[in-house]
Length: 170
Image 1 (cartoon, rainbow, N blue to C red):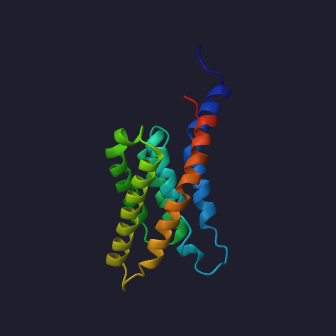
Image 2 (image 1 turned 45 degrees about the vertical axis):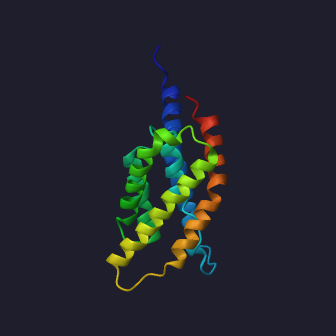
Image 3 (image 1 turned 135 degrees about the horizontal axis):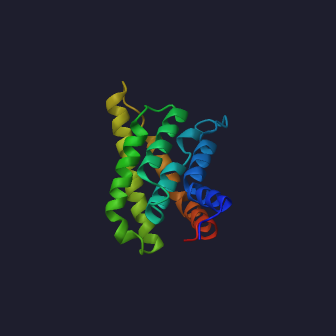
């Protein structure tokens, strides 16, 4: 039996859900709130979302979507164009190498793995900016942003799991 037009539209909307939610959250977290030094500690929702969806639903977060999201993030945030996509693509590559071990792992093991991978991603971002821009960038915002990203990971992981259970039933 062929699916109807509306069933196909529903399927497309559901499969675009991780990309759309990640894009909306990324834009929301980039909105300037005019609070001094807030941008230095705002968590990287893009990193959290890519970690979660690449781990649990890689079919709905393909590599081209990760590249597109990172490129849009670079355009909106004003960092060097291309740094974000490179970091996130390497992040996905590292995560895909560990995927078979992490899918059935406990939450604490996932959280520790996320801490390690996000720390490496933030460190690599700092090194790239150090190499590509004049002067030495401050390392403290990188540390604080990494810590806030790791701290809010459980909450967003729970939200994404809820979305997966309700909207993305297999």
